[in-house]
Image 1 (tube, helix red, strand yellow):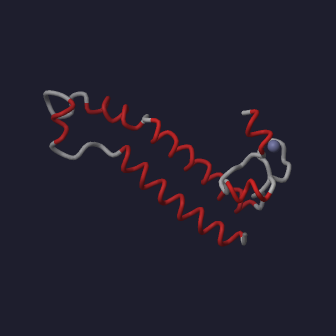
Image 2 (image 1 turned 90 degrees about the horizontal axis):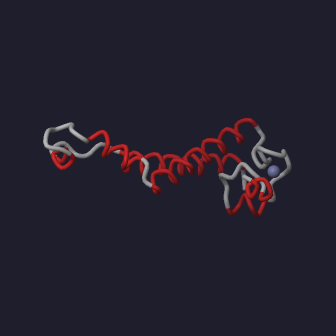
Length: 110
Ligand SMILES: [Zn+2]
């Protein structure tokens, strides 16, 4: 795949992830705060913290970080090389997981 096309795809992917994450971790709608405590604000922070650490939010945050890393590597000209051992990552793996920064061996060792 052409690298500038790839960068575009990754940026679009990144935007999707960012808005999804923002939606998941957004504070409750005004008026719904009552559900978290007797007074507005009471327990809300705790509830938001719980929300923002859900498995879904965590996995999106991880994908977001991977996508950022892939974009960094594209910009630096190191895209397709493993971050750990510096070996070329096989094209099939990059096609399957364009945001990966590690070869299969290093990824399994993590
Ligand atoms: Zn490696």
